[in-house]
Length: 136
Image (cartoon, rainbow, N blue to C red):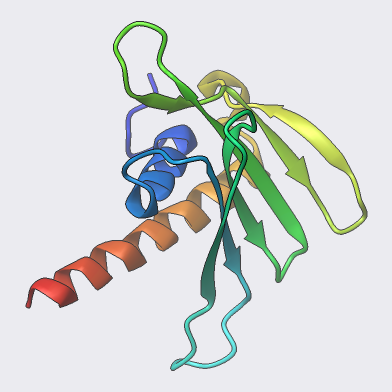
């Protein structure tokens, strides 16, 4: 019973669509560098064009802890639109790379999942604030 407020997949797709509404073949990298001062924006966003046969993806890095997750954007089979694959790649500074199942029942207790969920929520909040500033 994962709703949009608690589902990392929904946040990752929202982050991708914020900067890529036409679903071009790109990889988006969001990096959290750690808070060094009240005036410094701790988030950076980078993207790169990809060849059409390469999966579209989003990488969220927590540089302060040396961890990252990579999610893949895939088309919905029947309804059109896109979704995040149920499995993401997780990596850490020791070079460990693991596949993580995003099934809600499996990750509800995962501390890493909660950290990246919070990171995605804060990134999205920054985009919402930036958009509301432009309208004012």
